Image 1 (cartoon, rainbow, N blue to C red):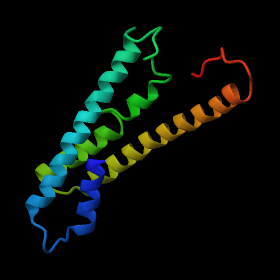
Image 2 (image 1 turned 120 degrees about the vertical axis):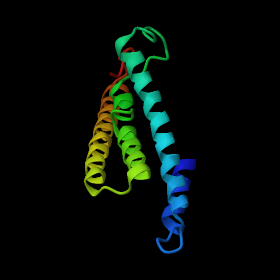
Image 3 (image 1 turned 30 degrees about the vertical axis):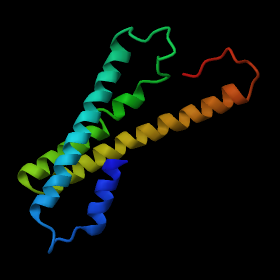
Image 4 (image 1 turned 90 degrees about the horizontal axis):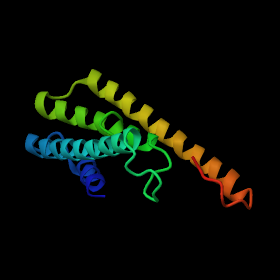
Length: 137
């Protein structure tokens, strides 16, 4: 919520003629840190649940690990991290912005596809039958 508010506030209030370069750097550096931390957290969670048996046979085992991969440092959090870090260090690069924008939207499209698949499976398995023993994957 805080990151969303910070970016919305900057979008509504910042003006290229009156806003200092430092104010833009604060927003970019905050985005860099937050995307980096969330990306590393989700990458760690993806690794732990994909390549180890840490949560097997527990209630903590996620239904699907795709979610964590596409929100990790290799997915949309990584694109936000790279874009904001590069821009805060070297300035705006339109080619990098376009590349990370495409990278981010592809990751988000996979997330949406995974979510829609889950909804269809949930409706088909859980709501369409009385067999509670089936599991959603």
